[in-house]
Length: 328
Image 1 (cartoon, rainbow, N blue to C red):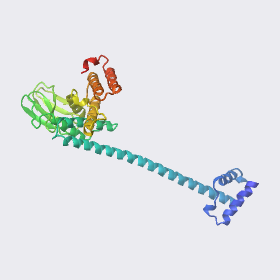
Image 2: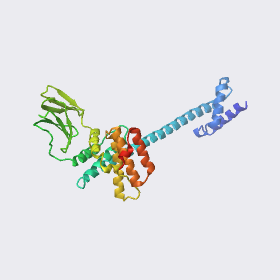
Image 3: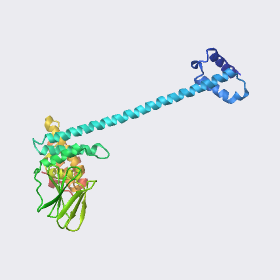
Image 4: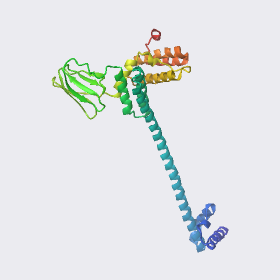
């Protein structure tokens, strides 16, 4: 057969050249020879050299394919590693930016207390939106505590109406106090009053903190009460409530502003979005704020479409809202 003679000639040529791997069969020649050996090899029509050449060629082809798979796998692995490092690099860059903003909040304290509070709320919003599982950086949390502290009396923890019997400190540094006035009060690490826990009917004699950060209090009323820890969401609620009617949150950035004023307006816009999303406002409160924001946009920039979007969003939240009554 023609195929048989051709394979034998190729095998003899490989043998005569010293049986080098470079002279083995490849590609279509190897495929044709393997097919012949599979179908007619049992007849014993090929000489021994031809069969050796086919078998050696098959082994080399298999080794070559495994090597190619290894190279492909290595390239794929490198792509995965590169993606991981790109994500990690972006995360580290975001963390660095948030820490820088938190530091800026504290640097602004000697200048004016309102601006750092706006920036602290905006930074906290950036942090909460940065990852699918919100995790507030300690620096960001600290800047929010400090910013709230700046707009209240410092270092004198006044508020109880009778003797203070017991104190405890949370992992975040909050100060918890129990008093003869039957209340438990929560203070920031800087001494800012944050919240009053009411429920006991007699003197609060002891307070403690659980590993989860919850507050436990004991009283002469024969009860022990467990209270949820004071979280960032609660702090944002306090800060946003203080600013809900302040015109700073209505600030609108426009192209004709100076760089500094534009930056402040953009920060205020981020703070406003953060309060709408995380500030604990009711739908009616959000709607009222959106109406005032819409009027501010129309007045400051003349962008009627953008203003109308705010008014429509407000109507969706509160269908009974009287927009005209809110127009200044």
